[in-house]
Length: 249
Length: 356
Image (cartoon, rainbow over all chains, first blue to last red; front, top):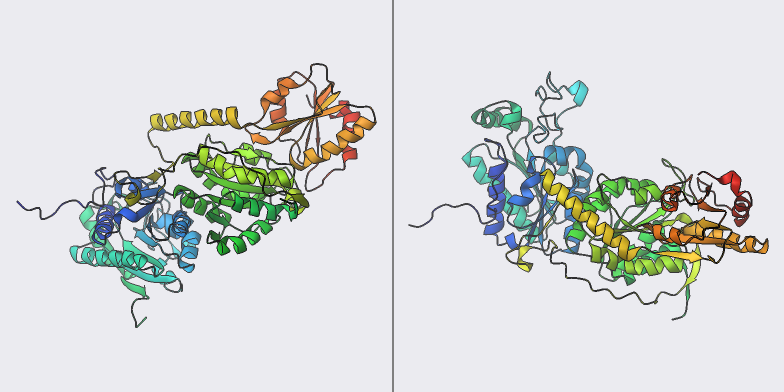
C-alpha cells in the first residue's frame, strides 16, 4: 500500500514536549516540510531560543545551536557570516524575540542578515507559566496582569511585523496563522518562500505566526483556535508586510 | 625578522590574524578600540569576517554562533563591556566551544574611568557568568608577550574546546614597544572539529548540536564533572609563570601584567639599597600558579602582593601561601599607576602592609 502521509524527515523521532492544543507542533511540521521540499535540510542550522521551543534543537532533524534568551539572531548572524552558503534560521517566541531579544532582532534585520526568523506570537510567556508578554492583548489576563493588561500600566501590544516592515534590510515579511487548515496551508507557503529567499541570498526574512497557548490562556484547545480568529487577528492582522521579490513593492 | 614598533592594541589585532582568526565580532569601548579598527580594515581585505555588533551582548553571542560553526573567532572589550559579555561566556564555556576574548582593563567599578587598571581579576578568574565554568586566562606583561600569547591562544582554545581570555590593562593596549611578530608558535596536534554545526551534509548520519541545557540533574552533574576534569587537565598542562631573582631573596613580590613591569624596576632599585627581592609573575591567572609558591625559600621576611586594584589576586596569593609566610599588599586603583619608588617604600615598610 502506498504511503499517503508520514512524519516529515525534517523532524527527528524525539517526542515533542508541547502541550495538547498548542500550535508549535504544527509550525515545526511546516518548517521541517519546507526545508525537506526545498532540499535545504542537510545544510540547515537551527537556532533554538529560550521558551517552550527551547528543545527545538532536539526536534529539527538538522544541525542546531541553542541560544541564550533573546540572542538567537546574534547567534544566527555569527554562524551565517562564517557559513554564508548554509541555511540558518531561528525559532523564537514573543518573549524571546519581542521583549528581551528585540535589539538583536532589529539589528539583524537592519543589516539584512540573510537568515530566516520563525516568530511564534501567542501573546504569553508559556514556558515560565503564563506571564504577560509584550504581545499580550489589552484586557488579557495573565499571571502578571491578573486584572487584564492595561494600556496605562503596560502600554499596547507590540506589533513586530508592522515595525519590521519599515526596515530596509528585510526581504520578506509575512504574518500568518495556523488556527485552521486554510491558514495552515498559507503559513506553509510563507515559510517556504522565506527559506527560498534565503537560499537566493535576498536578505532577512521573517514569518510571524499567530499561535495558541490553551494551557496558559486557560481555555480548551478548540476555543483557543477560535480566540485567535476573534481576538488576536483583529489586533495582529495577517498579510504580507514586505516582499522585495514583488515588483510592486 | 627585524623588530617593528607597534601599539599594543594593534599588535593584538595583528597577532590574532597571525593566529589564524576567521571572524571578529566586537563593540566599541575605550581603551581597546584600535583592535577593532585595525581588524575592520585588515580582516575584510583578507576575506575574513569582521562585524561591529549592536552591543557587547550581541557580539559575544555572534562569537558563540561562529565558534559553534567551527571557526576561529574572537571578541575584544573592556571592563563594563566584558561585564555585559559574561552571560555569553558562561554559555560558550558550558557548550565547550573555543574562542578568544581580549579584555583590556580600565578603572572601575561602574562606568569607572578609562585609565589602566587590574580591577577585573575577579571578573576574569571568577567570572560573572553563572555556574561552575572556568576560562583559561593569560596576563602578559609586555607587547611581545601579548603577541606570542595571542598567536597561540586560538590553538589552546581549540585544543581544550574552551574560551581563552587574554587579560591586559589599558597601558599595554595603548603603549608602543618594538616587537618580533614572527616568533614561532609551539606545535600542537589539533583534532578535527567534527562537532561543528556546519550542516549534516558535511557529517552524514550525525546531527551536531551546540547546547548548554541539561534539565536532568544527574546529566548536568555529569557534565560538570567532565568540565572539572578538563579544568584540572588545563591546570596540569598550561599553568605558566616566571620566577624573577629568586636566589636568597629577603622578600618576594607577586605581581602580573603592567604591575610586574613596575616591580621589575623596583627590584633593581631595592638591590642598590642592599635589599634582595624576588618575584613570582603569574602568566596564567587561571589556572593560577600555586605550585610556584612552594619554591619560595623558607627564610624570607614576607610576600608582597602588588596590584592595580584594591586586592583581588591577593585571595589567590593567600590560598597559595597556605599561611606559611607573612603576606602584605600594595595596590593602586582607578587608573592610578604607581612609580617604582612606591613599591620600594612598600617593601621597606613591609610590616605596615601586612594583611595576614
